[in-house]
Image 1: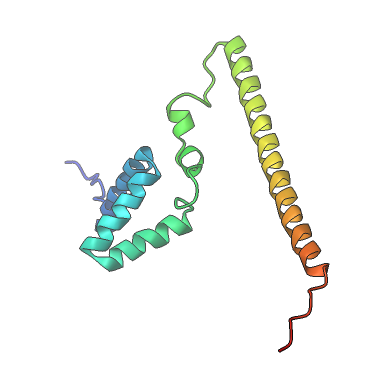
Image 2: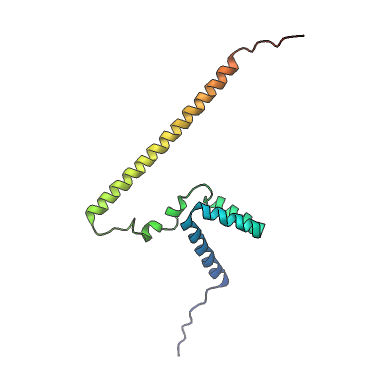
Length: 140
């Protein structure tokens, strides 16, 4: 007689798995799919649309697509992080990824400096316009 009874997943487990599947499906299609889902849900049932909007903001899906690469282990599923067995290729890949990360960091630093220069130029222009004495208004 078999006494081992496999536990059945609870309703919450099944719902969580279904929601995770939907989340992954939307992530594969990008930010546009999330926005379309949010809009359609707002039309159908505004509290659910509000919940999706809150989730998108909380999980940073609203402002960035980086979550797709870091949180779900997609790199490993496609073999980007796992060693291939070819040490020359693995070394080349590591070097290339490091170079791309460095270039990305340098580019972000450049953009930050560019924003700061633009802000400083606008502020200097504002201060220059403010420091010039205004001609008195003609009196009647």
